[in-house]
Length: 231
Image (cartoon, rainbow, N blue to C red; front, side, top):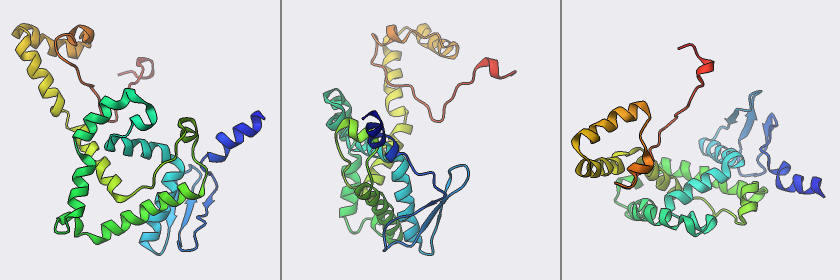
């Protein structure tokens, strides 16, 4: 029984490492070949068919990730993760990522609707994602959370790009935080924060009693042990 459970939950949903991945769709003429490092290469005489194959391959390896990203942009995390995510969902929905792009798409005169080639490419890409969902077992995360992903559409891509833009706009939250601290702290103590930040000695627990703190995140950040470098 443990072997059967392992097969159904884990083994059969592991992305294929076969040198050639076949897409069982007679309407799509594209090949996916993987090199010795597992890097996929898509070949097709039709650009749209290549986008379909790309969507299919990405879904085979990152379906849960892209569904979570879509839920972040749409404010739908609490549907699968519970009521603790409601404050996050409310905040994200108030930013109107999906509604904003939907309004633009529904306006036929908006410039975003002029690029037919782009929309066609996006359609084929997400058709590939959806084809994978319909014809393959879902990754274990969906089984554990007891739900199936809804079909994807080009709107999802634009909605998440809106969230990405917001995630890089750190001044939206940081400026408010530091303005609050500047009003509430003595000037000498406020400027001392800069020194403490460089020394990584800020007591954030104490600071949070003065003003609500936001996440201090970064992009592509990494840490290297001092034992592994001479510099």
